[in-house]
Amino acid sequence: MTFVVTEDCIRCKFTDCVDVCPVQCFYEGENMLVIHPGECIDCGICEPTCPVDAILPDSYPEAQQWLELNRKYSLEWPNLLTAKPAPADADEFQRVPDKYELHFSPRPATI
Ligand code: SF4
Ligand code: F3S
Image 1 (cartoon, rainbow, N blue to C red):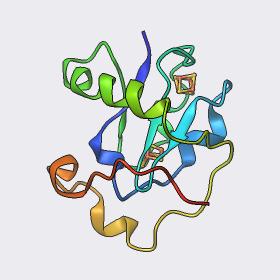
Image 2 (cartoon, helix red, strand yellow):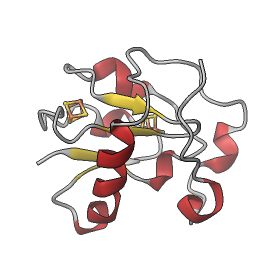
Image 3 (cartoon, rainbow, N blue to C red):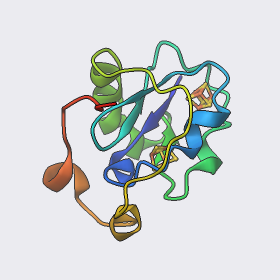
Image 4 (cartoon, protein in one colour):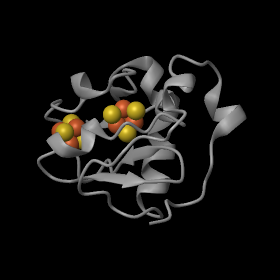
Protein backbone atom coordinates (compact mmCIF):
# COMPACT_ATOMS: atom_id res chain seq x y z
CA MET A 1 0.00 0.00 0.00
CA THR A 2 1.05 3.51 -0.80
CA PHE A 3 -0.55 6.83 -1.48
CA VAL A 4 -0.29 8.29 -4.98
CA VAL A 5 -0.47 11.76 -6.50
CA THR A 6 -3.03 11.99 -9.31
CA GLU A 7 -3.35 14.35 -12.25
CA ASP A 8 -5.22 16.88 -10.12
CA CYS A 9 -1.80 18.04 -8.91
CA ILE A 10 -0.67 19.05 -12.40
CA ARG A 11 -0.06 22.83 -12.67
CA CYS A 12 -1.39 23.30 -9.11
CA LYS A 13 1.59 21.94 -7.16
CA PHE A 14 0.63 23.61 -3.90
CA THR A 15 3.18 21.47 -1.98
CA ASP A 16 1.29 21.56 1.35
CA CYS A 17 1.71 17.77 1.28
CA VAL A 18 5.49 17.95 1.45
CA ASP A 19 5.70 19.58 4.86
CA VAL A 20 3.69 16.88 6.63
CA CYS A 21 5.31 13.75 5.21
CA PRO A 22 7.34 12.02 7.94
CA VAL A 23 9.57 10.19 5.46
CA GLN A 24 10.05 12.91 2.84
CA CYS A 25 9.02 10.75 -0.08
CA PHE A 26 7.72 13.44 -2.48
CA TYR A 27 9.58 14.04 -5.75
CA GLU A 28 9.19 17.10 -7.90
CA GLY A 29 8.54 17.38 -11.60
CA GLU A 30 8.22 20.57 -13.59
CA ASN A 31 4.52 20.88 -12.83
CA MET A 32 3.49 18.13 -10.37
CA LEU A 33 4.76 16.00 -7.52
CA VAL A 34 4.78 12.22 -7.16
CA ILE A 35 5.20 9.86 -4.20
CA HIS A 36 7.84 7.10 -4.13
CA PRO A 37 5.73 3.97 -3.53
CA GLY A 38 8.59 2.13 -1.88
CA GLU A 39 9.28 4.92 0.60
CA CYS A 40 5.70 5.89 1.53
CA ILE A 41 4.74 4.34 4.88
CA ASP A 42 1.04 4.68 4.14
CA CYS A 43 0.34 7.01 7.07
CA GLY A 44 -2.26 9.04 5.17
CA ILE A 45 -1.30 12.36 6.75
CA CYS A 46 -0.75 14.06 3.40
CA GLU A 47 -4.13 13.20 1.88
CA PRO A 48 -6.25 15.88 3.63
CA THR A 49 -3.61 18.60 3.24
CA CYS A 50 -3.97 18.85 -0.53
CA PRO A 51 -6.30 21.73 -1.51
CA VAL A 52 -7.35 19.92 -4.69
CA ASP A 53 -7.62 16.38 -3.27
CA ALA A 54 -4.90 15.12 -5.58
CA ILE A 55 -3.62 12.46 -3.17
CA LEU A 56 -5.34 9.09 -2.89
CA PRO A 57 -4.54 5.69 -1.39
CA ASP A 58 -3.71 3.15 -4.07
CA SER A 59 -6.55 0.98 -2.82
CA TYR A 60 -8.98 3.36 -4.56
CA PRO A 61 -9.78 2.15 -8.09
CA GLU A 62 -9.27 5.65 -9.52
CA ALA A 63 -5.77 5.76 -8.02
CA GLN A 64 -4.50 2.68 -9.83
CA GLN A 65 -3.78 4.38 -13.13
CA TRP A 66 -1.41 6.83 -11.38
CA LEU A 67 0.64 4.27 -9.49
CA GLU A 68 3.07 3.52 -12.30
CA LEU A 69 3.52 7.23 -13.01
CA ASN A 70 4.42 7.81 -9.35
CA ARG A 71 6.82 4.87 -9.38
CA LYS A 72 8.53 5.92 -12.61
CA TYR A 73 9.01 9.60 -11.92
CA SER A 74 9.95 9.24 -8.26
CA LEU A 75 13.08 7.56 -9.61
CA GLU A 76 13.80 10.36 -12.06
CA TRP A 77 12.80 13.59 -10.31
CA PRO A 78 14.52 15.33 -7.37
CA ASN A 79 13.34 14.88 -3.80
CA LEU A 80 11.39 17.91 -2.49
CA LEU A 81 11.94 18.40 1.23
CA THR A 82 10.01 21.56 2.05
CA ALA A 83 6.98 23.36 0.69
CA LYS A 84 7.49 26.14 -1.83
CA PRO A 85 5.23 28.75 -3.45
CA ALA A 86 2.69 27.38 -5.91
CA PRO A 87 2.81 28.49 -9.54
CA ALA A 88 1.31 31.95 -10.06
CA ASP A 89 -1.55 30.51 -12.12
CA ALA A 90 -2.19 27.48 -9.86
CA ASP A 91 -5.74 28.54 -8.95
CA GLU A 92 -6.75 28.57 -12.61
CA PHE A 93 -5.95 24.87 -12.87
CA GLN A 94 -7.94 23.66 -9.87
CA ARG A 95 -10.56 21.04 -10.81
CA VAL A 96 -9.65 21.24 -14.50
CA PRO A 97 -10.26 17.84 -16.18
CA ASP A 98 -7.86 15.84 -18.34
CA LYS A 99 -4.76 17.62 -17.12
CA TYR A 100 -2.50 14.65 -17.78
CA GLU A 101 -3.24 14.66 -21.51
CA LEU A 102 -3.09 18.41 -21.88
CA HIS A 103 -0.49 19.60 -19.38
CA PHE A 104 1.70 16.81 -17.96
CA SER A 105 5.44 17.44 -18.20
CA PRO A 106 7.91 14.54 -17.78
CA ARG A 107 10.71 17.02 -17.07
CA PRO A 108 12.17 17.27 -13.56
CA ALA A 109 11.74 20.45 -11.55
CA THR A 110 14.33 23.10 -12.09
CA ILE A 111 15.67 24.78 -8.99
FE1 SF4 B 1 4.25 10.65 3.19
FE2 SF4 B 1 2.40 9.46 4.72
FE3 SF4 B 1 1.67 10.73 2.48
FE4 SF4 B 1 3.01 8.42 2.33
S1 SF4 B 1 0.95 8.70 3.14
S2 SF4 B 1 3.43 10.28 1.13
S3 SF4 B 1 4.38 8.60 4.12
S4 SF4 B 1 2.57 11.67 4.32
FE1 F3S C 1 0.13 18.58 -5.53
FE2 F3S C 1 -1.67 18.77 -3.66
FE3 F3S C 1 0.79 18.28 -2.98
S1 F3S C 1 -1.56 20.03 -5.49
S2 F3S C 1 1.94 19.34 -4.55
S3 F3S C 1 -0.49 16.95 -4.19
S4 F3S C 1 -0.62 19.62 -1.93
